[in-house]
Figure 1 (cartoon, rainbow over the protein chains, first blue to last red):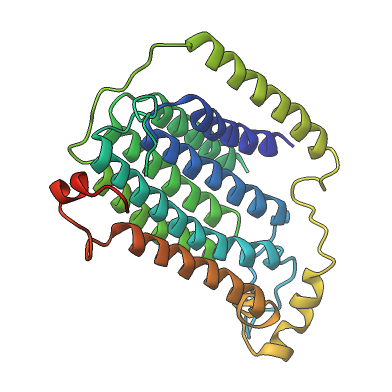
Figure 2: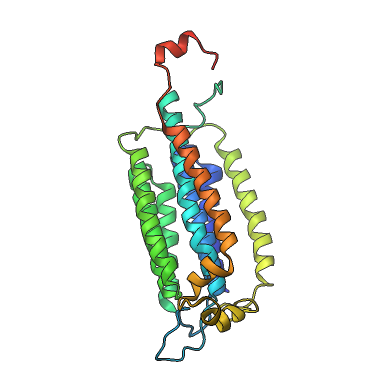
Length: 112
Length: 182
């Protein structure tokens, strides 16, 4: 239970960063931290006490494997996270080229 | 299990440093530390495939972010509606925490997951797919359509990045000012 709360605290760090900061790069960092926390939460739910990693062996009979399903889902989710981060950074760089700043309070004239 | 707590506290401290650091480059490096700590946590939690993927993705992510922040460390404004912004943020986080902690009561206890679906995969994975790594048999066989959909999302994001970044067909700056109707 405490470990879930620590994971939640990490998510709240990311959430605070997204809501409060005014630098675009800081907002992207907040999104990355929140994403890490969600991935970690899935793997924490999948863990089993004294568990083994879900890889079969021909010699030893392995009991008590951890849950493989959330691991498989998180594996793709991490890669998608990289792609969305690249998209965000590309947008931030275009904004920097146009306005010369990363500060969202100075980007006011949103014309096309 | 004590190493798990130590690593998680390390990650939270790294996240706070990344959020509060004024220097953008240092903040990016601190996020890199958080990601590498996360990779070790995945190893401790017996998820080696996820740990390897996280390691590679973290490096690429760091390179992309460094490209964006290098030599662009500008001062940014901190004044203006400070109190209101902080109060709204704190209120939002308190509401979120309240809901999340109530939801945590319904979760299975840490270390004792409900494995109703996964038990079938663990029993029949080797016979049905022939893969000794159950995670890859789930990704590429039992849930292959799910992976296909996620790949579609990935390629859509890549197309978006290419459309934003590419310069071919763009006009020069003074021409854009003259005919600003695109």
